[in-house]
Length: 341
Image 1: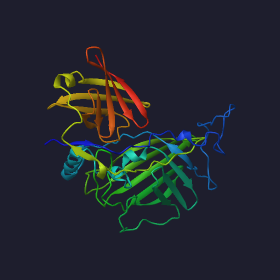
Image 2 (image 1 turned 90 degrees about the vertical axis):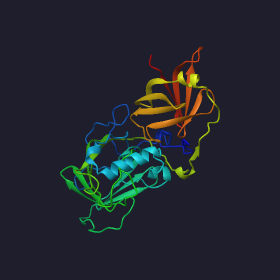
Image 3 (image 1 turned 30 degrees about the horizontal axis):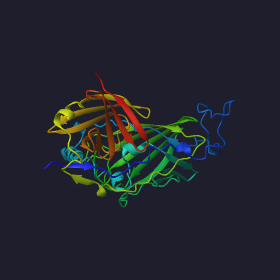
Image 4 (image 1 turned 135 degrees about the horizontal axis):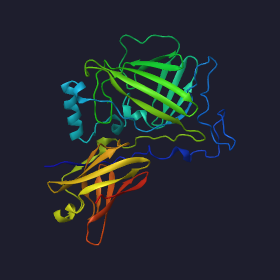
């Protein structure tokens, strides 16, 4: 019996943080004559002369440099298993901390900087502390979700070394695993007021032949505040069903098959809809595909409305019943994708 998963989780991370305190300007940042922040001005510096990384930051989902050939066979087997489960055990879907996961390097965070420690506060209410007091990393730290971090300056670049991660977190939304031997190195660079680059390298000889990682590009979120983005429903509450709410005839489903292209927020996205065994399958291609995985079985709720892992998909049809557009309905609003000829 085929298993269809319909997610009962709603992700609120895409709610614009600019909705908070719109009339309160960020203090102590350079501004243009019209009062707008000058994001290309020189980066601020602390009392020690080093770049000050403090501020509210936001950024897109980074692309990882993952190569399956670099992974141990057991890692690739686990990635395949997690895909078959529609990534149901992803820590963030279980309302658990994401730890070093590359995709959670995106989104909103606040950095607080002091001479002896730097704190990173995430919008999901998790946090990290980077100790800057010269201490060494523990040789055998107790495993934790967020790991343990120490930092040092190399010129204007902050180098952060982290160890002590438990093996319950992923390294990307696709399900790459790691062991408790994982070590990460981050390089933080703030070239000007408005930009922060974070280069991350994963090293785990028990899981990968050589180090790999990603680079996150963050932008200063001036004159606003971030809102919390809290997981309220675990994927434990997803339900499975072999029966759709309604029955849609195969010839009707066939009219929906095709390639739909458009934008999800500011990111290009392609949705490839195919028909297999009487079931529509949507393959999502493009940036910001973080909410449930790239492959979604579409469960009919009406003749044109389908549910796919917690998101709804509405087919717009012409007078002959042939789909012309596909509307992806998300908590952040609908996105329309015209069908390619």
